Length: 446
Image (cartoon, rainbow, N blue to C red; front, side):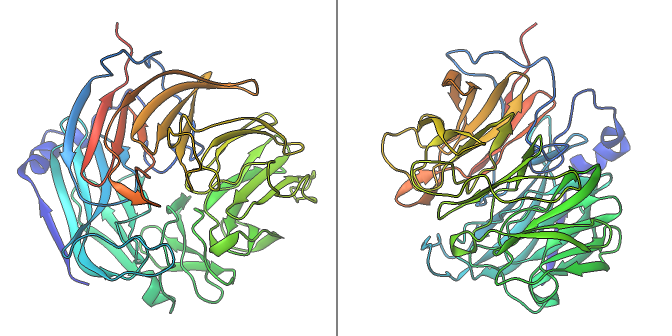
């Protein structure tokens, strides 16, 4: 793999003037699902409604294909894409495609959207839906970690784009990329970078975040799945949650030692949405009406599921991770494409609607809305490219306002979609499709 690096004069001037070290009053969004990786947006001073003309667009910057979301930290926006050199992928969900091109990491100025630096390398995608990278960059201090769709893992200096270390996971662990590509957003835990690799005893691995050297490897499974590693505090201790294609696993984060494992096998190896915890209930679900709501005991171990997946009950999430508040689960159902509110105790449905997902009235397989909690409401981003302010309660889905941010440019099952989790940082929204990154002002008017 030959990497190419380019930096603009603006980057050099920014470093000289101390831009990267300047103080940030508002919150950054340095990784998938936000600063605490929990889908909660904690900034104040955000607009309470969207005017008829929409919120102000600060900038638009052209990019190429990808499902990865933006990450925002220290005045910079990091995003990955893929520039195909032979046209578009066939998007056959049951077969791998062969698409040559260039996978890239881009760093943009948060204020202007101008490119500061980029790192790129040529490769041929051998995956289904060969549109671009899946995993959102993870920023930690002075470094940004990026995982490509074929398993290229890079640690870059966030200010300059200089390569600190790199690995090709499929080669290093004698495996190959899953049919839909490497998709699990890398997780930083202390001095470790935790990611999914593949192979025997290395479904999950922990690398020294400064050097890239392996610290531990754990688990074997039929496939690695697509679910990002996450941390849950159970019985007062951090548990690393790894949901592979066969089972949910809880590991000691620093050693990889298995604490417990619970079988949960979605169809097609599609473990995607991270398990969510509310009170003492752990919820996970996937395609094929597979779900589990596990009561956790005082030792942090799961009991038998309260209910099993079946038609007309529950919600079975895929592309987007559900919200779990109190005893209510709000999620995008991968079978019907509706957003559904579910009683976590018995699986009964409170309501269901297409409004924040596909916007239609008929089944839309994998209909998607990305769900972010903000104060007493939710900020939703639909697969149609809309930002939505809504109240979600057991009683109803109450849409307050919306605006169209960008066009749906990817294709799935014959419809156009945007399947990229947005970032909410410094009172702005950052979203991308296969053509552009868009920055939208969210601050309330004074």
